[in-house]
Image (cartoon, rainbow, N blue to C red; front, side, top):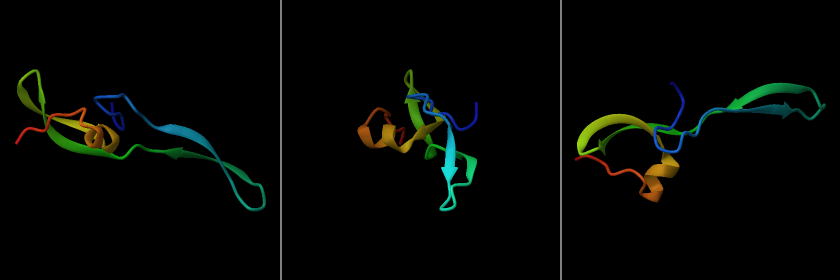
Length: 63
């Protein structure tokens, strides 16, 4: 499962980009994921976590 946060399951969002001449093309917004070492059930594991979860303290980093 690429481009998905392991904590909040935030993934890729799709939409339409509209230019100045109103040409509509498909585009994607990817979450800002970081690979971090986090404590999962007491063991350090490397997971992909979005920066919103890191900033809000939902992830306990393993040092």
